[in-house]
Length: 215
Image 1 (tube, helix red, strand yellow):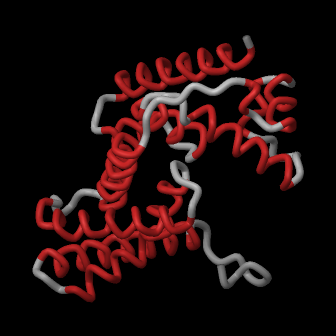
Image 2 (cartoon, helix red, strand yellow):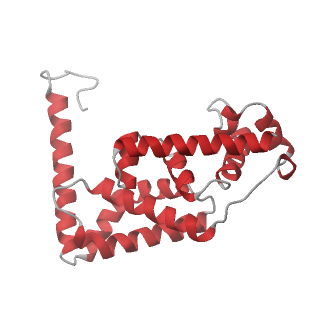
């Protein structure tokens, strides 16, 4: 990185430096986990600081209100603190923490939500226009302005609210969070084929919800 405008250095130097930094980061994280398992509060707080952005991003995929996101994040970190003794040293920490965040979000959806049915009459004019224009726009286009993306986001939230918690969970992980199939499988604690089946069924449920709206 320091050679960007000067001598590029020997071949492979930057790659070796990056690998070294990555190894150092993993060793540092593993050390924090060991200390946290031994009751070191500061070590656990350092782990939280390393991963809190990812946890908040996962939860924001399910909830909109800032206070709700913050409350659920605190619940995730509390569960992590209580369960850290069960974490197997040598395993990647982030996927394990992601799974706690996903499971906590899923439990929250199950506890708070009931399946809802909505119709075009329940939607605002811009939401209805967007829906009539094609379901592909529900997730929002990167080329659209902030207001249009906000309308698309609100509409997507309302449609997702009609799905079962399981379907909403997997759709959100894939379409909102951008998880790969392998990451979804890890987060849900299932095999990759099972994750693919769940995603297929969730997408079919989403399409059915859209068809009901457009009747």
